[in-house]
Image 1: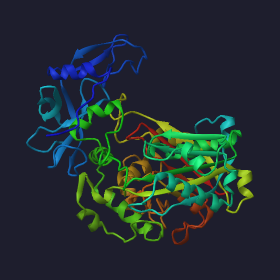
Image 2: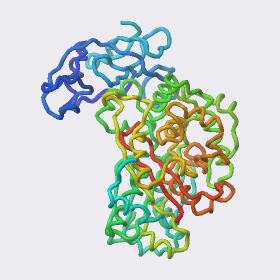
Image 3: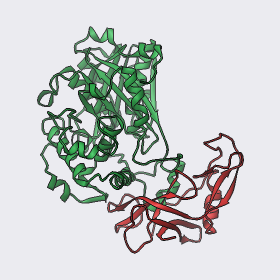
Length: 131
Length: 392
């Protein structure tokens, strides 16, 4: 199914490489230890450069979701669910993905990353219910 | 109250909007955005009673979808502009364009600036991925692969977060759509003038749940322009001047980041105190509000963040009839983007001007003296802007 492919940039390339290996890692500031997402050079808290990657639990809670019906982009024509997840490892940070549950999401429920291999060059992070 | 520097207080009421102009709103203009821009600029100058050669500034905003001042100026024979602005951005910056024009006029950098927005947003450049590429932002890579890229989807996500947190209901969104359509029925410019009911709203097809078709703004071809000059000069012109009492900018978090991000609070919540303090006014002083309504929910969240009701109470506030004609805070008296047309905010400013001049015809809010008009509150691009306008 044709769909938009992410275009990794100089900040995000390592994130996508790690996702390709089914690793869920975020940057942690070398100076103050604050975790951040998405990947970028500066820590928004202490405004310094320098960070290392840390594998974290690929978990969060459901903040919101939509059921898409209108075909805005290339890809699925059938209704599909996009979920907005409050990431457990990075306070105040949201990530998105398609929903891999057999039932609709519930507000505040715990979810875990579910890796979807699109093809040899692209793996995406989706979300499924449960720890 | 927020401290306001003296030089900012001096800016308040120094400039005025002296004229407004429109092209017709359609689904296919059949002409270029350059043509639309020229027509709206000339219409605004005609309204103000100013000859074209008096213009020494032009300003617009766009997302690669329209004619910049460097085309519009020469096209109108304006070959020596003292000041111009070609601001990147969509609805977040509509009001910032007029605010910056007011700053240019206040400092003497320019004397007469025409601000315009010209779009073929239905026939040529539709927002949200249909017929055009994905918007350029590094954060798109974390969303677009999931089929999540269009503003109706993003706003629907935030609308549901608000529903989950505060119990906001589909009927609240629906009541807003019904109310604005009733306003549009009294507006000869409006594209959608046939009244709708709550049942019509609920029966409209899903776009991205929780949004239905009638939660979403129109896609419109058209242009709108306003003339900004000094208050002193505006007083000598054809139309009653409308003073720029306050102009404010805001910023916030992105889709993905920002410690402690609460998706039910917009950048407008931080902007509002600055804006009100600059004008020396508060929410109770606002007689009419033209609020950015790309979707029903954007109005509801702004009613909260601009202090017209408590946080989480926007839905019940709309359902009470407060925002309808005759209510304590008439909102989007022209029908808004939902029913008049989508010109990215400039038509909200122009409607506020009409209300304050008292020439809004059948939809006139009696005795309107102070208006608030706002840009997209900062969900899509983490930026927003707003104006308080008043009658002298």
